[in-house]
Image 1 (spheres, chains in turn purple, red):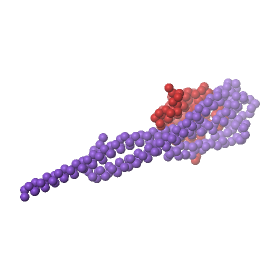
Image 2 (image 1 turned 180 degrees about the vertical axis):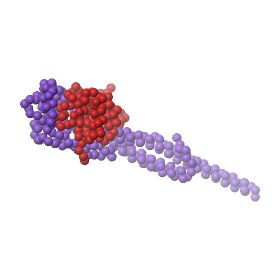
Image 3 (image 1 turned 45 degrees about the vertical axis):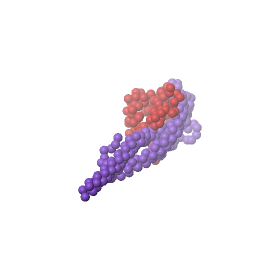
Image 4 (image 1 turned 120 degrees about the vertical axis):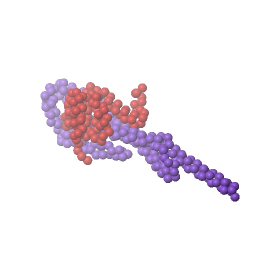
Length: 213
Length: 110
């Protein structure tokens, strides 16, 4: 499809400039897309591994917890974990992946000692061993869960950006650039045609003038 | 750099364990309640929201919408009965969206 423009020299110059720009933009966007893709593939592989790992480990921990709930009475269970000793503080900063901003999580465990037994907010006297085991696993799993949150978010955002970039590349490649180059060719032809017709007219006029004298 | 909170939404039996670690837990029984809770938490300062696949299933649209935002990061987790594979599906969807073809899960799919 050629654009509807006047076939003038000025228009030709303008279109040529646009075409140049479009070609340059296309090349840059294509590079961007390729690099995004490369990063995305690394990220998504990591994401998949991480999720498999988390799902594998989380489910038994939660199942153990269910067991603990079964052997303990509801009240003593509630009581045991009513006041957690530790707290997760989440600090969010931004990381820049190819000018896509993704959150980067870092966390601090506030409260509680650093020792092994310090995650339990209760005494061992009236709680079951399953509860201890479940909470220990969960606590170990927490860093992985947070990493999963970060990686998954980055993958979401990257996938979005890749889609957008790919659309732009395709639009340039298949629509704008062919359109521009076709129009440029059309104007060039038209101008040449006009030149030729002017030339023949001149020659004809010259012949007529010569014939009279 | 600022501080955010972490939340877990799901059925009580599955998520109570997180409470012992000091993560805010929001037990829900139905997915409507879960959806309401999630919408409420999104407006507050929560950086990460874990949600069990069982209650998250009917609100895939909303989760999709959230996935284009910087925060919060909503993560699907299995509950004590096991995984429904929704989390994996969302990874798969991302791959298809970005690359146009399935390169990670090709062996299992067909």
